[in-house]
Length: 235
Length: 124
Image (cartoon, rainbow over all chains, first blue to last red; front, side, top):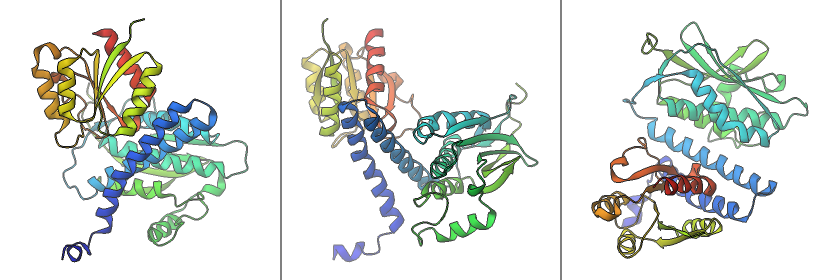
C-alpha cells in the first residue's frame, strides 16, 4: 500500500522539505506587515520574520551542502566576509540594543573557501551572541566580529567581553551531544535552543571544518578557521 | 502624473495582492497574471513599463516564459525584474533575456522591489 512505502520517510529529508515550505507564509506575512505601516511594532515583526527566513535559508544551505564532496571553493577575503556579516547583523543587533564592533586587518588577505557558507555560518553565530547579550543586565552590550591571521591560516569569529557568556570546549562538546535530545542544548546561552549554532556547524560540515572556542585578548567567542590561499596576493 | 503599468507574474495570490496594493500606493497600475499563459496573453494585449515575475510557476517554468516573452520583438525591450523564491547561484544567468535584476523574495522588501522598478522603468 502507498502509506507503507512512506512509513520510513527520512526525518531530515522531511524537515528539508518542510523548511522550504515554511518560507512562503513568512514572506506573505512580511509583505502584509509592510503594507500595514512603519511603526516600531511593525518593524519588529518584519525583523523577526526576516531573521527566521535567514535561519531557514542557512539550514537549507547547510543541509544541501553537508554531504557534498565537491564544493566549489574560491579565494575570498575573510575581512570582507566579516564586514558583510556585520552589515547583515546591524538591524538585528540594534533591535537587541547591542553594539557591533568590526575588528578586521587593513591589509587584504585571502582564504580558499565558500563565501556563502562561511557568511551564513558567521551570521548565525553572531545572532546567538547578540541575543545572548540581551539577557544580561549589564548596560554595555557589544559583540565583536573579528577576522585575524593565525598560525595555520585565518580565523573568523564572534566575540564578546561578557564573562557569563564564555563558552569553553567542554560546554561546546556537551551542547553538540544534546542536539535533538534537549530542548535547550546550550543552557545559559540563550532562552531558546540556540539552533543557529548548530545550523552554523552543519554549514561548516561541507567545508570539513567546525566551530571552535577561542579567546582574543579579554574577549572570548567562537571562530571558524579558514585555509589561506596564495591566489590573488600577487596582484 | 500618468500611471505606469506593471505586469506581475506571480502564482501566489497573497503575495500578488500585497505587491499590487503596495505599487498602487506609489502610482503604479499592476496587472496580475498567475500563470505563464495568462502573462503571455496579457503582454500581447497591453503595454507595460516593466515585468515583475516569479521563476517558480505551476505548470510551466518562468524560464520558458522568459524565452517566449523575449522572442516577441516588440516586447523584448520591456525590462524584466525577477522577483522569486528561488535562490540562485548566478544572478546574471538571464541577462540576455532582458532581465535587469534578480530579487530573492525572503531578502527583498516591497520597498526594495519598488526602488528596483523605479530604477528600471526610469532607465527604459
